[in-house]
Amino acid sequence: MKVIKETDLKVLFTADLIQEKIKELGLVLNEKYKDEDLYLICVLKGSIMFMVDIAKHLKMPVKMEFIRLSSYGSGFTSTGKVNAVDIALPDLSDKNVLIIEDIVDTGHTAKFLLDFINHSFKPKTIAFCSLLDKKCKREVEIEPDFYCLDVDDKFLVGYGLDYDGYFRNIPYIGYVEN
Ligand code: IMP
Ligand code: MG
Image 1 (tube, rainbow, N blue to C red):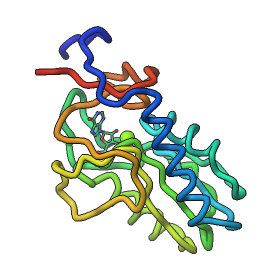
Image 2 (image 1 turned 90 degrees about the horizontal axis):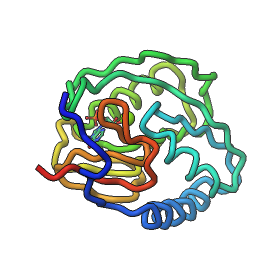
Image 3 (image 1 turned 90 degrees about the vertical axis):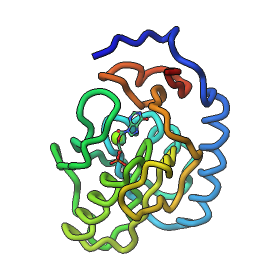
Image 4 (image 1 turned 60 degrees about the vertical axis):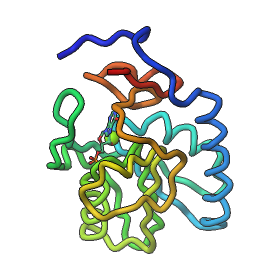
């Protein structure tokens, strides 16, 4: 696997811009789920930064839950096959569920999660919230109900997104220029 250093990265979204967009999304979610209980489902590991930051803006009663899936192989390309690797969700029957993702790429993960939660429980409402939307790569007809930023066909790292497990901790989103 190619070694990439932080100095190889070009900044796509600054930390300030990301935080600004998340704050705006918080207003939308506070309006949408006003006075409702809300279960946030963080898709590990990529969504951890986004989950933590969006949760701080929410004013309704919130519970934070986590699920881990395997979909990505190593490197830059999606395999298209998704598995639930580690599931420890509470009973979501009759709950308002909001899935929190870092990015919708092919859409396989989003579709798997929505189907999986819908079939395993019968939530009162279910919606999909992604920080990023890479529409040009879609293989499954699916759109996030909420998202912050559109991206084109670049492999991104930072703010939760990784390359070989690295770069999740950097506060901005960057890419490697080919
Ligand atoms: P999908 O199933 O193809 O929509 O892929 C979703 C998952 O692929 C995301 O949750 C990410 O973990 C990963 N992914 C997609 N695009 C990128 C990227 O540009 N950088 C890092 N991870 C990505
Ligand atoms: Mg992910």
